[in-house]
Image 1 (cartoon, rainbow, N blue to C red):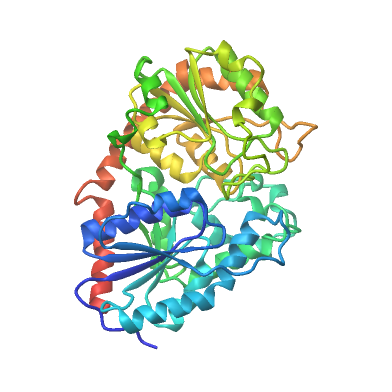
Image 2: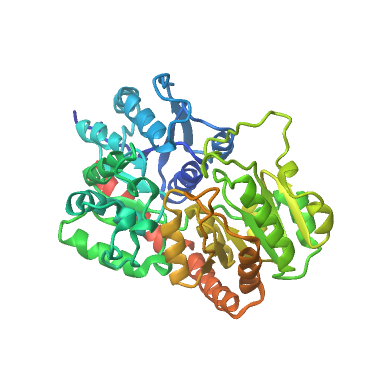
Length: 482
């Protein structure tokens, strides 16, 4: 079936998988297409696995952007503790008939039809539906080009190696990318026995159905990778990639009365380490105690967003849930007397802080982060150097890339007999790493690089800049095709 003839206003449909790291940049992209490129956009999410954080990200969309959710599908056959990736991929595949019905309704009733269909990085199985309906189809990759390049290589890696990826004798060296040890690759490909392993191989193959990739990155962050990928796409190896980042929210004055901002207002310039390990990451009970002790021993000011610990899974909070009671308090898991002893020099807050406003505050001089890509772009856009503490997904790859560029410092995780799969960073190393970033020479170099990235990010997203040019070029192609 051919798509309907397009009107003067292109209509872009974005399919977004669960998780703040996916929904937030999708909302930013849709707003950019609507506000600056004359498009209308429909953000399609999933009723399954939806969280309050996802809903809040879609609560104030600009004119021309709407959001809707695909109907809920049954997951009763999945174990309650099923892995994140399996749950997401299952929802994506089981809702494909509903997605097809939705796209057909747009093609039949909307004046613009569907000018382009964008599936986020966990939804490429949906590209086949768009292809069947004759709709131009793209992957909106909310992480970086390094991650995409690695995932595209995964099918080849699966057939050319016999050992586990984590045991590869030599680093994986891909065109334009930093060398990656096998243990730094994305979590599910570490172990062939992992039920998600084959799903990741299929993911890499599904990406090839796309007409192109929209990547939430910018040239100064991944110049060599972008150049190398263009050479490959020019040869027909991969669909083309377009750098459309950084897609980050600008700070506003709405958080001026937040307790975090009021406390930062009283601190010296560049003196505070902001500590936040993402909306979905968790530490063990033991690691939470070691982090607290290390922050206290460092002698540096800090603002720490404290989340519930979990001894089960470092991604236990990904869907905004925990196994604690409603009346439980994450602050109760901090060492006894910690809050009182660090009062004045430190502030610990439960669960959430206005991160963009915090990172752009003059008092913040460092960011201890899980290296999620949204947080990384927010830090780079604010000119704040990072202390890398990766937890899951592609975060170790991000940490390797960031450390190689000296944007931040990677905290080395030492194995623990109690948690050999995840390890525990001891308090002494926490304190040492914090001091290196905040007052050491390595921190000074990272701070200089972060300032350069801030200027580059501003240039990339400025009116008429590379981000605008990339999106304008794509919208122009869509209009011509219509």
